[in-house]
Amino acid sequence: MDVEPVVDKSQVSVWSSLKFVAWSMVGIRSRKGYQDDLARVNPIHLVVVGLVSVLLMVVGLIGLVHWVVAK
Image (cartoon, rainbow, N blue to C red; front, side, top):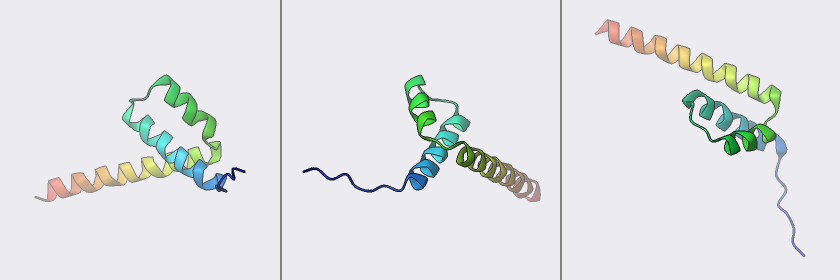
């Protein structure tokens, strides 16, 4: 008798959303990979992860500009 491990779907969904957003920011993804990821993500998680990622990128760029200008 095979027993499947119990996996918390919220963790898988958040991780899938993180990977989905990361691949989207890079801009390189096969259609099959895109469709597979799209089937596994929760739209709410996707929006939250996307907004946090963009916020981190903007803050990082502002910090980089301040660091370069200060030298």
